[in-house]
Image 1 (cartoon, rainbow, N blue to C red):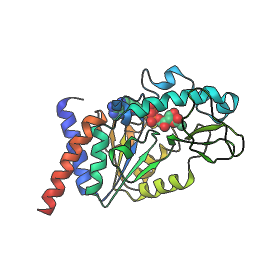
Image 2: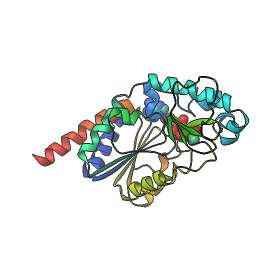
Image 3: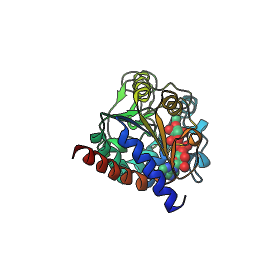
Image 4: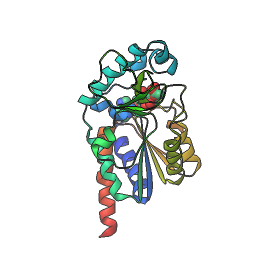
Length: 256
Ligand code: OAD
């Protein structure tokens, strides 16, 4: 995308946001890429090096809990060292300018919370908490072992990260809250996601069918590009602070 196209798409997105009362920001791994957390499906991404079915399914954990635990412990360390970037902060700051602003994220890294977003729906859970795979009780003991999945003191089951794996259901109340925010929103920002994993990606289609304008922010084309009303082909940390500036301008102009 040329600099001129970038500016034009940014302006089109800003016009939509300036008219909007309710906004959903739907985020994926690309949102955290500039914080140093690898994505899944980009060149060099996690699913190029590892097979999801060996590490991110209940069957994989039941077969070899220690291997899956050690991989998540490694990812946890990467995430703990990461910091939210200007894009996360811009989304948090946007909340103030809308009647309703909901972040619906597929990310498990809690960077939206750390940047100050207050209404965040985590569709795929969080890597920063653990629970028993058998009885579901939260596991809060510290320190966590690096290589061996802890044993649940209540039932003797093995402890796992509180994330959603392939083949598992999304947390029902979180998904229901996401659907209702999506059905009400005027603008749906789709940021840093390939749109390949369902049911999460279906939320963008749902927003569109309920009449929202869809704005994609992603340096690359995705499964969702064809339904986007505006496509901003740029990284999140570059595009979002610029959008925030424009929203601030139009809101201040409107109240002047
Ligand atoms: P993917 O790895 O599938 O897609 C990442 C997207 O981010 C791609 O479309 C990139 O072009 C884009 N991207 C890369 N850098 C970016 C940047 N700086 N700014 C904006 N976009 C950028 O990740 P997800 O769509 O999140 O689920 O994947 C969805 C789910 O699949 C994940 O939640 C995870 C994974 O397997 C589970 O583990 C259950």
